[in-house]
Image (cartoon, rainbow, N blue to C red; front, side):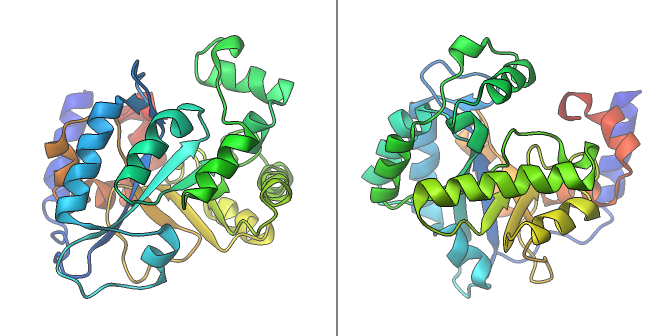
Length: 281
């Protein structure tokens, strides 16, 4: 049944508009963890460096704020690199590789994770199917070192809850508390948020975007595999998820080979998306 539904979705997507021209193409990549013993959310340092090498050769890697500021007229795609959650391996393994190539990235931090808040750690242990004692968040000292190397930071909420499944008051508290903690720790404004999981209608909704605006954010990114369009609102900017995948797969995402997935996800009812991709629900 799932196979048939996926074939139907793919066939329907072929009738949609083709990917946009490469001129001015802008997209955001979302990584999580870079680790010599990668999990399903991470990739090895060697593979991440191969990704960076391909990006450096074929794209302009720019800061997230510069990417969303407006379209480029350059021939090559413009790409912003982001990370979610705030794992210590971002400092140990991702940072040296980015710095060696003179690249920047934005790291969206789950504030309660870095604060090592006990209820948050217990919740994340269940969410990530990892014993509490094995959870390894960044320290604030490591964040400061990363910032000194040109990295930037945003919010990934206080405790990584599904914002679409909680009421407006709780969602706003998740968003506001995270921003306030990060701004205190960093002594700088934190205008950007990455919504946890971020799938349309399953994890973000119109209520989510409104809560982010009330919480003081100016930029929000969510999970949608397509390039940016000029019509995208600042609090609903799409990102491609990237994991332990070959450079050829990354190249396909950058060059528009799977933008049709974004068109499908934007139009598909939530119940059908859950049936097709229950592992991402």
